[in-house]
Image (cartoon, rainbow, N blue to C red; front, top):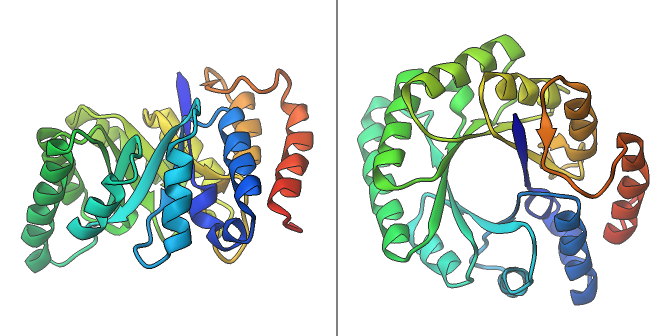
Length: 265
């Protein structure tokens, strides 16, 4: 099974990234792409003018990786993100909600996704806090996403409460009912991000969210370098990487990345 990496380093290390100069920022993005990331995600911030310029610079690069912009379920944010020319618009949907809010969420999803479709954008949808949500609502929203034109859904363990057996059951249940590729975001606050990500892969998830930095105040995705080592050791996994032939070469690339980011990790 081929595993694709969604890299969220730039979203999760925004403060460190913003401290770099223009040349250094481009070098960091090129490095992440060269490591084989299928997609590089940047978090949209309407108020940060420098970040808005950075997003435009990144989307203008000739990268092997797709570039996505992470958005709240907010049409104004999405309209601004579309103007930057990203390959993918990612919409984060808060689904752990009361019964009264569910219809509001569905209507907002329809409105935001339809606007993206009319703008000829590829859309992915994040199911925020899915690990605490009703599985029936997860499936309902996933079906709605497919119907409206969403290309992938992201199952998010936003609070880090999952364990492998549960994630295996959750992803299998979704895959059996809804015909759509799945990304897994497994929060790593308690050190379970990698094992839960592999559990999701075993259940059929085709994409894994990870960051090249972990265990900082901002970062909570599973660590990219540790994840890749684990995936190479797991059976029947083909990781979409072409940077190195031996997993032990990862250490030197990890050190190279730290140098680029000027971070003492």
